[in-house]
Image (cartoon, rainbow over the protein chains, first blue to last red):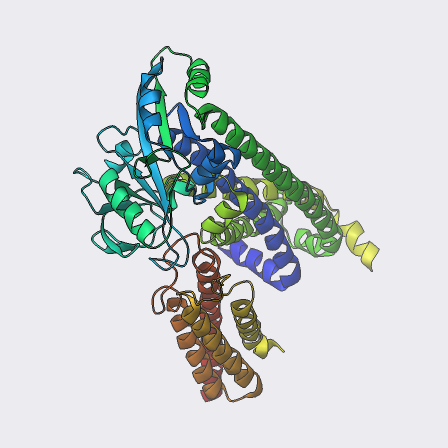
Length: 401
Length: 135
């Protein structure tokens, strides 16, 4: 206890030095914690997107593919309103190698309907769907009825509330869990509801007409699952050859693109963390070597008062450990304050799927950041501690006289 | 200098709130000029920020610890109200990805929470001063 109070007094006597040590270790811990959280969130977002996509091929109108609408819709929730003739669905189902095919219709809400932004409304067929239905089933225990909607976790409304789209009132029956993708901002309904809403949109002057075919029978995208053992690339080529004015996109290709972007971002973050660590470590070593000269006389007096070398180096190490631990704790807390409230901002800036890890993993990362930083701080201080403990008290005090 | 450190921080934070609420930390802006649902929250944040700045300036010029403590307590109340302004007292846009929810709300909660912590520190310091004066 006596040693502890001496240690605290030593630290508080030099507030500038102590604060700078704490700030340095805080920056180390913050960079490590924030970097780890961002990279792991990106990885979790990618795996969530892979799980949720559930289809091997997506067939969209040619115009949609040229605008890269499907990828933007999935990643950023960009509104995609493109249509093709509903007869395409039958053609897709008849294609060799196709196991299941399910259509979706996209519609955009008006700004004034619910929010100050447009919302993507996705109509799907619950009976044939294999993409949306499995994860809607996690939140809803009955079949989605007419004028009932399921909202993504980022649409600010609660279950039981009414949601007005084109002056038609829809009841929110479930809210989906977070996916970290653009689908979190979408509203899902069945085919009957989407047709009523398409009609309502047309009454408001928003048309979804296509160049040819029956205007009331339209689809936006067809999700395809290939037969087990079938080559998705071959089926994709078959679909591209068979279906006119539409393009089949392999989801694997889309995922590879996303994974490449994610690797790029992860690499940049890793380089930044390394740069911060190298800089901070250099500064830490400089600070500690300056401390050797600064405290030479002070420690010589301790030696004269009867402190052994071991006790002296132990005291310096404890001081360093206390500073490093405090800094690491402050840095991790500061990192949490920066990373967690601004999750949406980070996600929209990176334009990649981003899903924060669960609480247990976050605590684990925080402990890891604190431990590593505190250990590095102690390692940097141990050299100084051994150097200072070897100080000859007589020579040092005579030098200063 | 040392006795004004807390009101100095209070003033700086209030300035960040005021300037931020009309620039990068403000509510959503519609391209068509129409008013977003979060505009009122932005205005309220600006007002509370101005009140906090005024309180900080008053604390800076007043020397009496009891009055300073009351002013710190007022800034604590204003900061607590500020935390509840975006989203709880005043509505925000109903989409998580909107600027008001992604930037304004978290930034203002952090800034007002910092104001609250600084005000508590100020109250403790002033209370200790009053006790010492009594002794």
